[in-house]
Length: 246
Ligand code: 6GU
Picture 1 (cartoon, rainbow, N blue to C red):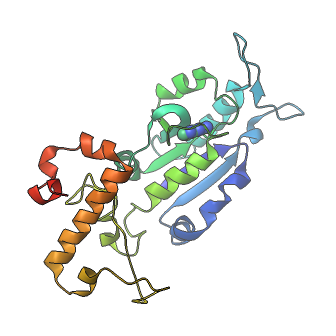
Picture 2: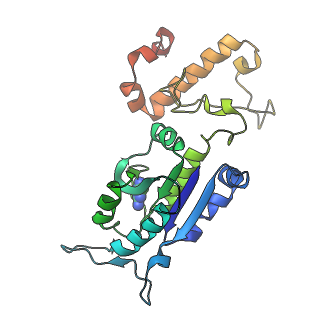
Picture 3: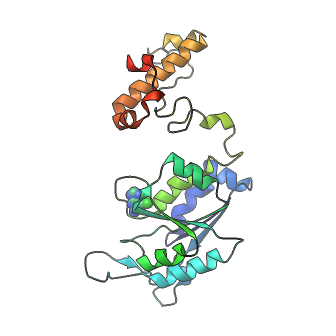
């Protein structure tokens, strides 16, 4: 997968050199290219923002540098990319969207600062490319760079061969499958006793059926406590009689 990011803070994207995403790049599974938006400005101060028409607080990112930058990036590859515009006004970024984006050959991210990008830029590229305005949650950040880190990590771990073990995503919270609609429950490892705290007996029993039932009950308990909205929204057929007895 090819991944371009256009930003006024290229150094903010340095975590993409580390850990899972860094390794995927080193292995050639991900081709990440970071671009400085100011490279497409022409004035002495490399201006990227201006005051909003109609008045109001804050600044708006000017269309010209974004237009030149996106023309250069879009024309630098084969075919057309999917453009992901991080904005608190976008559609929610979900595991489902992460899966969909992980199947694209080429993504371009356009993290903005200030009050966002002049609307005409989004309109212009939506005529040429698939453009997605995406939010990572119901809170406001100072810019789209941290959301890009979040989205790229969620997408990269879904690419074939990036996680060591393809089974690793099977039980993810929000993954489709047997535990769909439930959050993952607690996990334990050695030592068997730590600061006087043991391991639930069932996990030491070797009884796979009982372990599966216990894991499901714990997942159900956690979901009821932390995300009751997920239980209400779920297909009632997703829950069995034993779940309802919890
Ligand atoms: Cl994508 N950007 C900003 N600035 N704030 C956000 C967001 C994105 N998603 C949630 N809050």
